[in-house]
Amino acid sequence: MATTLAGVPTAGAGPSRVDHDASVMSLKPSAKMSAARPAVVERRILGHSTRGRPIKAWRLGQPGKPKHVVISTMHGDERHTKRIVTALRDGKPIRGIDLWVIPVYNPDGWARDTRKNGRGVDLNRNYPRGWVDLDGPYESGTGPASEPETQAVMSFLSEIKPRRIVSFHQPLNGVDVDTKKPRFARRLAHALRLPRTSLNCGGVCHGTMTSWYNANFNGAALTVEYGARPSRQRLRVQAPKALLRVLGGRR
Image (tube, rainbow, N blue to C red):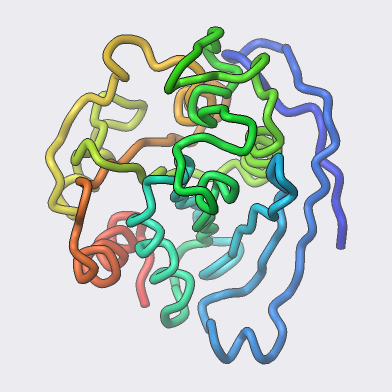
């Protein structure tokens, strides 16, 4: 089933829009996939990267329950936290929540082991909330939401409007509690055994996904940073259990 989404909110809470077509392919899992990944109830291709690689999302849990999204590898060289997301996707069925996961947000960066996408843009500076023209390591693109990855995820989040978004990064080692729902952030920091911190980008965070979502929707998005080399056990076992518990899910 193909669905076309357009008119994604862009900056602040105002009326400005992005006009684009983001084709979203939604597929029910096959019998073989259901046996291999019993938690999966739906999968989607949200769009494609600048180099044509698919951006995949997986739906877990129970449709109709509180809706949440978990994201990893917005920066392709922050690779370890993907293990949290794949452990959620590949484990036992999830109850109590409607959970979408995006294991590889930036497939071009992932393929090249680099922070930026295939056009050299930092996708977490490309959102149309406080966007400014940045160069160097935080190159923000030719304009707000200039990149197809940004457009695809904006369309997806605008469609499903999750209650919570947890975006995993590295290597700053902490949970941002200076955010829209600080109580939730504090609970998550405690559950994940990470310090509470304020991730302010050294000043003002221009064009970030979390700031865009928090300004435009009732739900709340926050950033979680692990250290440079967290253990496999921590990411594949402890973190998924803790995250599910704080979101209200269970296996």
